[in-house]
Length: 190
Image 1 (cartoon, rainbow, N blue to C red):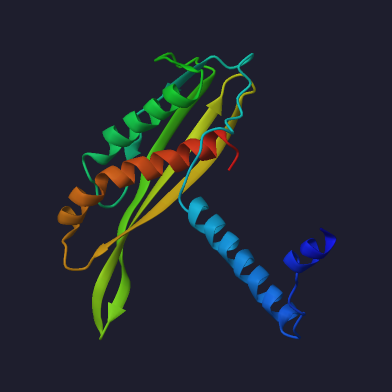
Image 2 (cartoon, helix red, strand yellow):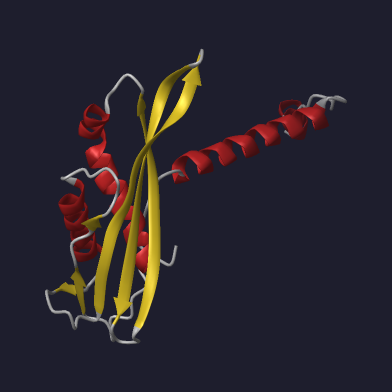
């Protein structure tokens, strides 16, 4: 019986390339894990790390974000304000109020809505970038402190599109991404 086991457990002799092959194998695994980590973490926001002491903070008032940018998209201010209110309602236990004595008061403004060239090919623009910037003052009425928050996001679009055409395609992404970043900077200590 033992001779049969010896025959079944026959092992090929080790070659001199075996350590190199192992290193290559482990390098491929490490690179794959690194790439997987990079691709799964890019641009994904989570709201699990909200840091609010609910024993002290119960209410919040979110004022309309004023549009102070040079170029004004008339849909941006009301939609961004509403998205921020919805995010706060969905991911915190704070109650929304219109009272200026709320535990938190959010005041803010859209400070930038600018287009720049992002890609050039053959001395011609092939890509543009819309940069949206928001400044928020988060007044903490419990501690009487104000936190200044600046959030900015870039949105690329083809140079063959006019700004109004690009806005139609990008507005939903602008609202989602800018409100995500503002929320995270206010309540997740980003």
